[in-house]
Amino acid sequence: DVVMTQSPLSLPVTLGQPASISCRSSQSLVHSDGNTYLNWFHQRPGQSPRRLIYKVSNRDSGVPDRFSGSGSGTDFTLKISRVEAEDVGIFYCMQGTHWPLTFGGGTKVDIK
Amino acid sequence: EVQLVESGGALVKPGGSLRLSCTTSGLNFINAYMSWVRQAPGKGLEWVARIRTNYEGGTIEYAAPVKDRFTISRNDSKNTLYLHLDSLKTEDTAIYYCTTGTFRDVDYWGQGTLLTVTS
Image: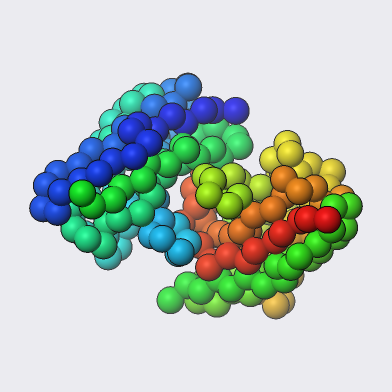
């Protein structure tokens, strides 16, 4: 199975400041169809996960543009341009290129 | 609006069985890939099982830890997804989420249902 490794595990952030989360895969996530199936999810405390980004850099409907995804191959990044209070929670990356689908271990974001 | 509502979570003894259900609305269920993803207490996310559309033969895939113990199924006439769990172990304790998506993706999630396996 493809191992997804996120860093850091914990990320204390200051409101209004930027934040960045890294996700690395044990194999390239470039599929033979040319797509890279790397998603980002956000799970607020006590809630189910919500998808933010699909195929590396595409924001889901309703996701604020302060969230952006980038990367290629095995290295991916989720950036928050200005952290807001509602961004606390755990962020997960997930790959869908290789079967089975696998998730990163999560990055917990909280406010300093 | 897509809604996925899980039910059936309970407190079960090791070796026991249970069936989880996921009723859906707001999506074209008959054409939807449906999966179960679980989250052990304080832990990360683990994909459990997926069922493709009946048009594609309803092909089923399982994660290794649950293969031969869990059975995923769907009833397109009721827009409902199921997960039958047998030979339960304490390590199966988790919130079980119903999800939908494409062949290589997960997009919508339900609110989850809690299964606790303990003696």
